[in-house]
Length: 81
Image (cartoon, rainbow, N blue to C red; front, side, top):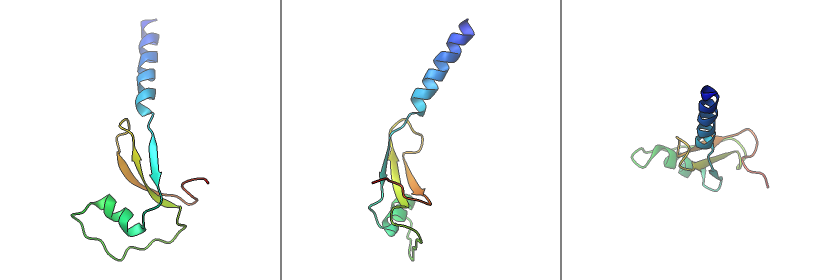
């Protein structure tokens, strides 16, 4: 019985830690998205993207997710209207 309670407690902790809130931004131009991703110490140029304007964007996450920010590329649109 103790093992079952330990398992349920561990499952509860994992589910609470795995829950994260994402904020998606599709309004930045591609050059700015890449520059934000690589940082200001790296120079980039000649950036091109072939795809819909809503199929690339950046995300920022809540404190419970191990990756605080990043890029999203999707075949369709990232957000629904």
